[in-house]
Length: 167
Image (tube, rainbow, N blue to C red):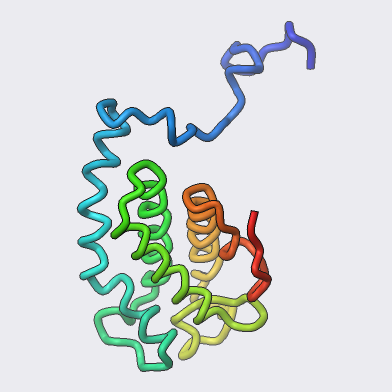
């Protein structure tokens, strides 16, 4: 591609590249900063909901509590982790950091030796074609693992189980 080539929108190539916004560029007084501050309280409130209870029970070897026994429970937890990591990256709030560490450690504790994670299995079989929800949950986990790495600098959610990856 030459510098004279254009994309469908007729923008120069440098305008078509995706780059993550550095956390240091988010001004607390700006639009994104106000959302980060608002999310700080909601991130902590979510820990009092059924969202983490399924993982907590699974990691402890207890039965799934009824309020957490639903198909999307894991993906909701991963979305919580992703959001909490982005809040933590900007605020460095200790409570949020501790909650992130707790949830991350539960995920790693529950993860199977081959890397598989899904608190809904059993009772379902792995990769049950009648469910078709595992790839959805895996994608949410990957997004959470990337956010965790960006916010904490740790790679423990990115590597194979017990790899101890750090960067």
